Image (cartoon, rainbow, N blue to C red; front, side, top):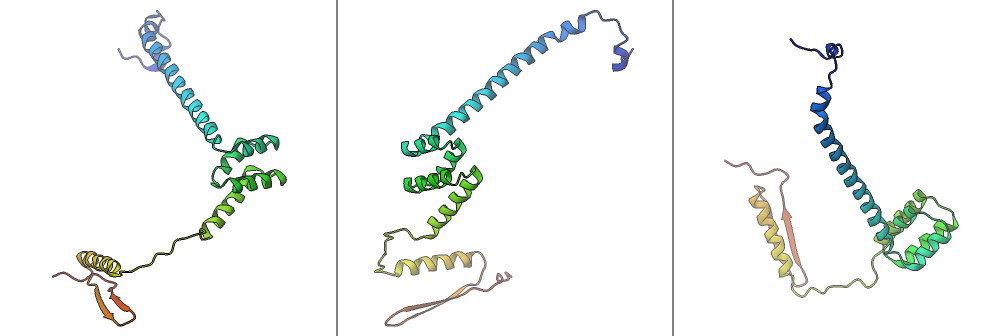
Length: 177
């Protein structure tokens, strides 16, 4: 006789089924506790890592953050600025204008963009005494292009003052027979 789920309710309950499933239930409960324990550990570790990152801020920054009641998210946003002076300036502006985290992040984004577009002070100027190195690189690149099936050609003219290098690279690959 096949017992369907809805018919099972009509059967007399002798407690055997619960006894059969009790060890499996206990194992699931232990597994659940372990999983919950692991999840809690991961969450705690992540929180600690975030808080430890805040220790990279100078004592002056941390003091200003506390004095002006700014949040941990404000502080993490400031970590993107590498220069201590930039961090302090951003922090003072955020406190003065009572910026929320999104406004502070926008300011930091603008500062990072401005800092990247400005050329770094003291950039070195290299004096090239021998251009053969660069010409060899161009030749190596052309060989790679040719090996890929593109019929690239080069013309080289040397004058007293300069070397004129002309590259001819077709837009389509050569047809192989």
